[in-house]
Amino acid sequence: MIRKSYILIFVSVLSITGIVFTQKKLTVLTGSSWSKESMTYLPGQDRIKGALLGFESTVSHYLWIRTILYFGDHYLSDRNFEWLIQMVDVITRLNPAFYPAYEFAGLMIPDLCGSPDAARVILERGLFHLGDKKWNIAFYLGMIYYKYYNDTKSAADYYALASRVPGENSHKLAGLAASFYREAGMDELGRNLLLFMYETSESPDAKKYLMDKINDEVKNISQESIL
Image (cartoon, rainbow, N blue to C red):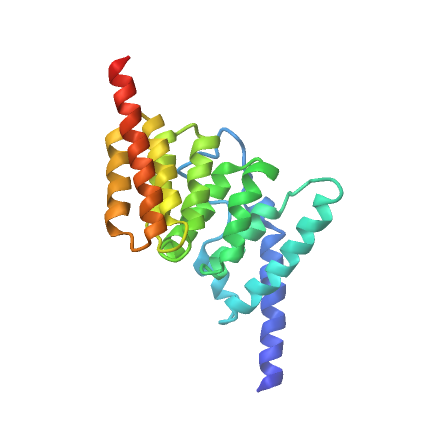
């Protein structure tokens, strides 16, 4: 029985490795055809999992090790990350709750692969599976919308979403979201967010920080009305 399990794991690893390194032949990404709304450059999750015989988590961890080695090798040499998007995407399909892959997607893929669209799609998957546990995923999405899409309103929305994940950073994220709402010309929405976070916070330090941000908003309004 144990021997059979090892054989199945070995077959699964070979199968998923083959999937990763044949993606370029399955679908070719081009700038004009690769829209923000459509990204189907990998086989469907059911097709991938169907070949793994229940060892999705095991294979995802194996692929993660391979991804780290692949990234390190190319980062120190040619900076050519041809397969990085596909590898991270497959890992998060196999193991949607594997947070390190989403962090990689948010920080590395937009810049080093020049693919904010790919990062966005992968992070949206993470938001669905881990959005109530990891504020970082919504935060990375906010960064992408602001830096690459020039969409301040959407960035503020994602920062606000990140601020609702319980944790020591929630009040700072609320302040960040309020600043972005202000930049987007939506001052009232930003103030309402700060007030909500202030009223629901149980931390004296957080409440002080939020009140300072609220007072700053009020001062800005007063100065603008004078001008």
